[in-house]
Length: 302
Image (tube, rainbow, N blue to C red; front, side, top):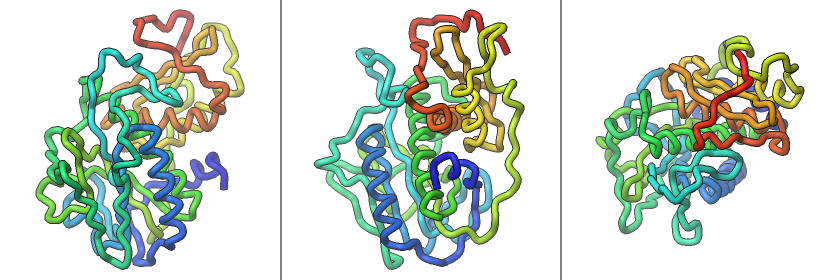
């Protein structure tokens, strides 16, 4: 299954069976997490085979059952005026990388037991007030959320390729959890959690806005095939309540910019959509526009 097929196959599945995930599959996911951490500077961690990967915590919305496996999407917002605002694959900067040679990136639990990955200097506290991203305006926080969406969706699609089901979730009051399987360095927080496993029921019908509402192209121009393919892939990206709160703009010079529109957890959804867009359009065709200069979308139309 290629990534485009995985995008079509992916649905938000919130009910899972007790069938364990094969160890070889977990190893592949673990390697993918390591690669994402190395590229992004996130501190993503995984646990598998738990009785309840949510540790009894409620989710921000949505009802989940049988969650035995999860990936914690962890990072920190960093403000660095010296940064040029870019990251590999067009992901906005906002966090710096961890040294993969000195930190354990994943906590892999097996046989129903949690793996203890606590190290000196780490903390397990997480505060809901600092993790909410419904109306983020801080540049560092926005960049963190977008990166979580981008790399979290990369992991979700890899899981689908491996024959698993997934769903995004926000845990409420995770700071009250006893003996959490995730570990946080100073300044870090869990932004979202990605569940995975064998689904107990099929996914529902997927909804989407018309492509014309999600992108702009130069006046009088035909939409290039690569841009259309990117948008069709972006339209398959997960967003909270299927709101699709993003807008892609193609300019006359062939560059592309993105922005969020009104919606819940919009910046995480935009990160997911950007990953889909790059895969659909072909990364060799996508040249993200430098929006730090304040340039307007001249020549573009709805």
